[in-house]
Length: 397
Ligand SMILES: *Cc1c(COP(=O)(O)O)cnc(C)c1O
Image (tube, rainbow, N blue to C red; front, side):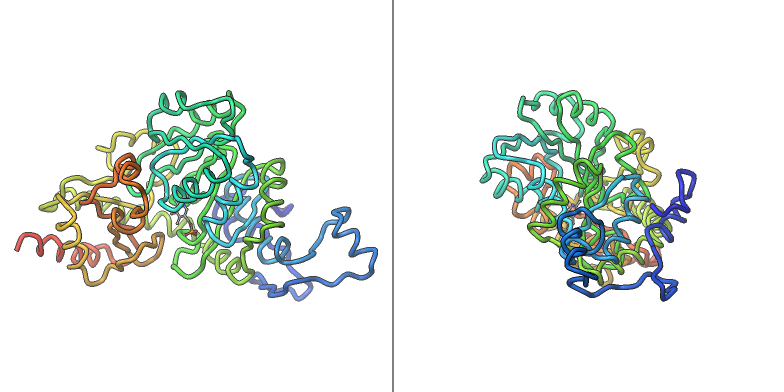
């Protein structure tokens, strides 16, 4: 964080100004540095940089001024010592696992996680002889029971995607720490504008910047945040060596995204709450999942951990046929797997984002064939309703 800011500085101020060290050109908006390497004044300076004796830019696989500005700003927003930016959210998760874990370690993961994260664990962690046990996100006893001597990481997303289940971050951080393990929280759905997991004891926060941090569906990116000790060493070492690097152009787009993050997350949350409430009254809708509804089983916990409930709402139709009918009748909503966009998106998780999961994992994650996920965007709320209404009419006719 730049010197001019302290613990009292407001979120919106940090989101707009933190991390930017102006160059001699006096640029007002952050500069993009599209350069792969940097020039040294002498052989001795080059040697000092490479050895780490002197800090400074070396090579953009792991040091780039635009990317660093993004890292510093996001670190300020999450309240983290260190941030490592990556080429995608999956790269952030892979860098965390492969930077920290070794053969023979054990991971406990919520079964309600992003589908590809499941695939990473099943196809790659297991191949490296790293055990994975899946547990019920909201059942603390299932996490306790899964602890082993070699457990190194507890991994979760909260709220879960697509069902919006809420994990008790503080309780799981305590459990992790009592067993010499790290709690890793994927905070892509809330962003620091709505939730700061480190404050509740999490050790590492992960982001897919592709989602709400960009906010307009343009760029791929990710981030890992935590202490200098873990993220600044093990995770950074993986990034430096394996190279899943964020591009400076993408970092610049994400910087612009951060500047409006709070405003957008509040607007997404307000639209989502209204849509969730409205969906509950529509014919053919069997169930609505949104942690901002007072009827949600963990509404109180969500209210404690989050300052808003986010943009993801899901709801169940009676079967796959009805779900597909609703999706196909919409004309404005985008049928796409992406989320966290100004444009509202509609998805059938069982056959798309979560389609590569085994039937057992799908069931454990609560993904049934009638489930539809909405990422509620920032269009006029009435237009979103009109479009969904086409689907409900199609079912009745
Ligand atoms: C999209 C997403 C990811 C993966 O991020 P990419 O940028 O697509 O690689 C990870 N976790 C969550 C919760 C996501 O929504």
